[in-house]
Image 1 (cartoon, rainbow, N blue to C red):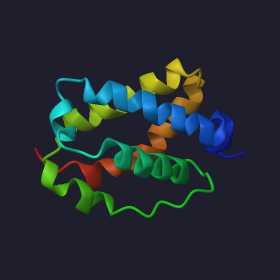
Image 2: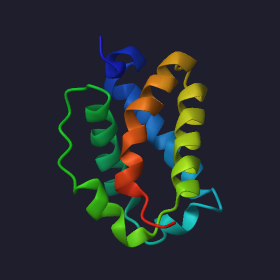
Image 3: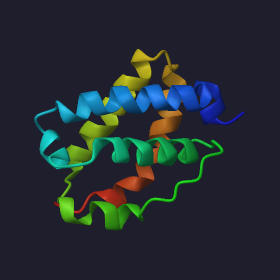
Length: 118
């Protein structure tokens, strides 16, 4: 069984993405990255990306992560804050700690594609 199935599939991913964006757009360290962003479009891409990354049937057809984030000057502290918000979101939805760790491990290699500022 995939992580996607373990957490509850499409409905769980959708709920997680909605809660996650409430958290990140209100975080003073992160809110500036979302100014002027089409949040509905971003959420749609994020749902597909997370679902695909967790073994779901969705196909992610968005831009390459490095290209999508290159202009944002994201630092390690920003990446870490996003991961922390995702973990908190998943915990609030009742996802077991072990599964949250698996999800964090699956997303950790993306740091190299997302972080572009030292």
